[in-house]
Image (cartoon, rainbow, N blue to C red; front, side, top):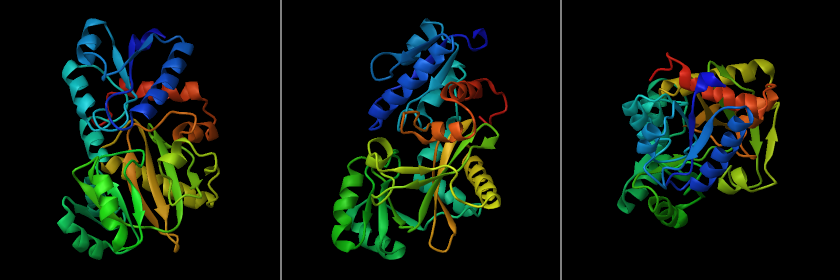
Length: 308
């Protein structure tokens, strides 16, 4: 398809999510090539990516880099400098959505419900932060994805070990109130929300194992909510997505507590595209196969009013 020109699929990278990025990127690359689009893979961990983008005549970039260096505004800023169109959110939306703490501050300021939390940068701050949040709580690295470094903590005895595990991958760690209830995710594609998915796992939460390896994770589409409530939830998710400056495509994760109140957790601006990934599942439920989804995401690189 000549309208896209030569497409660089950026995959791999150097973040802790590199293995998932490679899987996602290879799936996207195969889809683009299957559709007759001139696409090649570039891994920023291997060679001078920006130099190659210029020297080898690429027209646009399909970003499949998960985590820091690829999902946090870094590569987006570099591509802006080159004047090269790219998929998904711009610099601001990428950087803000990657930061769970500051995403939460924006949501709380705009009336989007998100669980109470405290940021911790040193072990001496743990007790006071935990007291403010209350047990049980979840410990999260502020700038990691794929649930890396996350752990539920039920009491003070296990708190420091969980914090040290998270602090090993991020200097900023979030202690967030544990929400007991059903977990949902809403994929955003362009101007619309795709069908809501309800997640069910026998694990404490939808962690790395549940996301990428477990065959016990269940995905409910339809999600089981009444149609009017699902539509309202999808509208709230899109509002949460836009509030952090995200655009193009992505995914919003949330939970309902025992009283049925929604609590928004985070935004993913470069969600997974593996065989276990949620956005392709939601797209299928909306009648869109994987190739059509990939092409729709590629189309986000040619929009002129995406908020960048």
